[in-house]
Structure formats: structure tokens, C-alpha cells
Length: 317
Image (cartoon, rainbow, N blue to C red; front, side):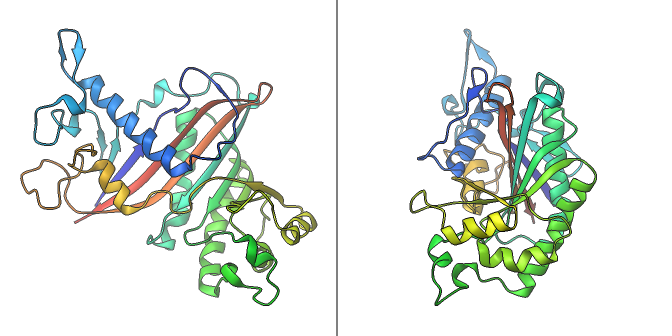
């Protein structure tokens, strides 16, 4: 098995950006576009120069435009392949830790084993801290696969469970994962921990089993901008801050990973074609595991200095 660590680097170009609330671009579009841009920049950095101009991936005359072997712009450490290679020594925030609000959101993807989520939580946080050169983060939010918020269910008294239904097995695995977040807060690595897409019905089942309660519940209000009153009242009662977001729950589908890394016209040539035995790319089934998004905001100026993503997938023979 090979683990792939995809990264975007800092997607804030031209210096810090004033915080905006985009309403049209969802996070999966931002993620895939940023990954492609980072791939291309890394490929161009190692492409031979001709008359002062570097060929891009599309300029190549090879079969699928992959003149530059993926081995030249990626880095392998044991069974982990960094795509592209990462120079952690050149990253990091410019000021002291006290000057930033650092928020991290961890997306567990569908079809992955819940048994590995505690380890994956630690891995995701470690990657972000290493990238930012910081010892801690302010808020860690976890998003579970298959969990989505539906405002209509909050006000439907005839069907109180609706899309918020949660069976005991799912609840057990969520609580087990939550223990990893609680541990990080106890150690001082995370100041606050939170959930995504939990309506009042889910919260009522989840909260009694926690040791440290969530400080935040982040929900996607798709239809409008109105948070149901019942959830507002319940969250206020439980001292949980409600935040809204524009993220996709399944932020990185399996087909998207293969398109990004494959040997096709839009791919980076890291994965071999499904029917191309001659390709040098990696062979096997690719299984996305998790995505983490991080944002560092300068507190006294209200600007984003660093924002990016890591995405992890596994290739199995």
C-alpha cells in the first residue's frame, strides 16, 4: 500500500487576503483547482528551460502531455508519496502564535474505515502544525461522512428524525473519533473542538456521551440563510456556537482523485491508466481517506495570511 499526501501549499496569492464569504464557489472546487495549480507549479519548477521559457505539462509532446516524470516533482518517504514534494522549512507563518486565529476542518470521506479515524485525526493536525510552524490551533472541526444538515427536519414535528437519524453503531464510531479530538484539547494542541452538520436531534443523542462538549456546530444552510429557530434555541441552551459554511460533505470523491492524478489530459501522471500497462504511474485502486482545510487569520488585521488543504488517499493493489 502507498499513501498519497496531496497538498495545495498556501492558496492566498499576493499577500494576505481580507476575509470574504464566497457564496458561489464551494470548497471542493477551490480544493481541486488549488491542487491542480500546485501540481503545475511543481512540474514547471523542474521542467528543462528552452530559450528562457519552460514547458508546461500541456506543452509536452508525450502521449498525454507528461514529459516530466512524476518522480521528479514528488517525494517518497517509505510508503508515503508527497504530491507534490513539500519543503516544510520554507513554509510557516510570519508572526508569533498569539497573533493568529487558526481554524482546521477535517473531512472524513465516505467508504473509509472508522477504525482509523483517531490516527488520521492526529496525522492531519500534525501536518497542519508542521506546515504552519505552529504548536497549536484554535478550533478543530470534524465532518463525518454521510452526515448533512437539513433545515426542514428541524421544524418537522411529525418526522423528528428525518435526515438527522443516527443509529447506535454510527454514534459509537463518532464518539470514538471524538475521543481523539478531546485528547488533543486536553493536551493543549487544540483550544476548541467542534462538529459539522449536527441538528438538534443529533446533538441530543451525541452530547450526553461526550467528555468535552463541542464549542461549535458548523452547518450548511443550503436553501437560504436562515438557521432554524429550534436549533438556535437548543444551541444557546447548550452553549454551542452556530456557524455556517459552504463546504461539500464529500469534498473529494474517488473519481476526482483519479482524474487529478491519472494519465489523462487533466491528470498529473502519478497514476497509471486503468488499461495502460506501459505507463510508469502507480497501479492499483485509489481510495480517498480524508481532507483537512486550514486557515490562519491575523487577529488584529482580520486578514487571511495562510490557507490551504491536505488530502490523503491510499493506493491498494
